[in-house]
Amino acid sequence: MLAALAFSALIAAAAPVRHPGQPIRIDLHENPLVATYVVPDDEARHPAVIVLGGMEGGVPGGGLTLQGYATLSLAYFGTAPLPQAVEEIPVETVTRALDWLSRRADVDPTRIGIAGASKGAELALIAAARDARIKSVAVISPSAYVWFAPTYDNRSDHSSWTANNASLPFVPADRGALANFQRAYESGGTYALRQIYDASLASASPASVAGATIPVERIAGPILCVAGDDDREWDSTGACKAIAQRRHAAHLDGRDQVATEPDAGHMLELGGRPSPDVVSAGRMKLQLGGNAPANARAAADAWTRTLTFFARTL
Image (tube, rainbow, N blue to C red; front, side):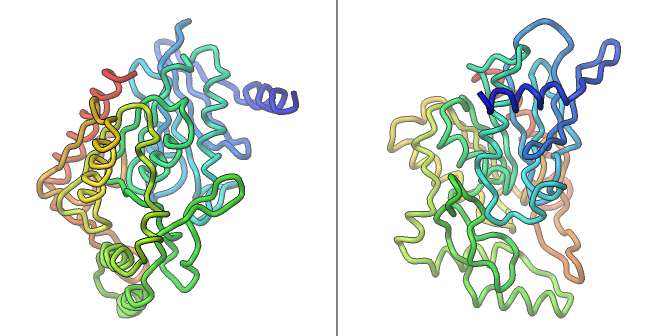
């Protein structure tokens, strides 16, 4: 009863914004939900998509709009009152978003999907493996594993995620690779974070890797997996292959799709916006991979594939 009253109050507190001929927009800033909700201004019940961004933090894309869908662009860190880093973030952030969507009269609760890019793809897969209400999953530049919290310092022996107030098993950071990163940072050099992830996976025990592997075979609905073959953030192409292999072994891949974008790097955002090949991070530069034409083409193609995939699966 208290939970129902809390959600009723949350919905009532979120004032919809209407403009003639435009979708309804609701900005949620109620702990623990920080999100932007956009839905067509009509009387229908719509399929819904939860959108998760990457390490840019906050509400992804300022609130993406998917034509014909109810879209909830969900923050999980990087804006108050949420944590400022991806360190032990509750997976229940997505659970509460699903609860909120399922209570709305303009959402068809039997047709809810989730889309995530980069770190948000990791969260999307974890959430879908834990909650059967997610019927369709699209991930761009994903991981196949739960990773250490990406603080890239001596505190990195924490999980990125928790569930039921307990840390999820994770691949720990390789200390030598972290030391190399710190030296590159101090010298103002250029660095590819994939060096840390590849070294960490190679140095982790088989038991650690097995425990950190996201159980994608528990996801009942179809998965779209898109990666650039020059991703220098982490091995997202290898992740898509690993996900496909686990799904195939479980005989669940009948409607799955895998796409590799040639010469493209790490795609950070959804919505068809291209990622740069290098970004500044304090005094250093981080290589994301690819080149400008390939990244632009890949971002547009990944978003088109995502929209087509949801049209077929939701």
